[in-house]
Amino acid sequence: MIKKQYHRHPTSVSYFSNFIRMNDPEGVIEDELKKYNASVGKSKNKNYKLNVKWHDEKLYMMFVLRYQ
Image 1: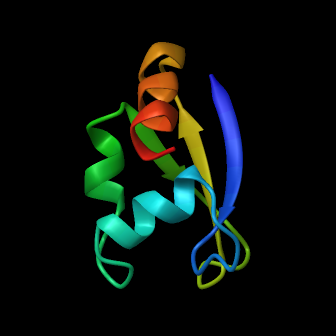
Image 2: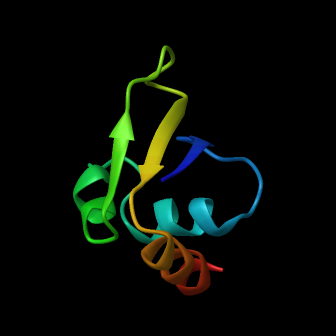
């Protein structure tokens, strides 16, 4: 399992910021992450940060390559 923390409203360009921009920044991105066998964990700052748990390393790499 891979655990990463991302900003919900990113200021820099990265694969996750590209993902957010392509999938409605104000929408529910948890549904889109389910396609990659990932889940959003608890965070103290729910409005600013996302704790994402990637359960499959191959799908994580596919996600990174797609939104790079």
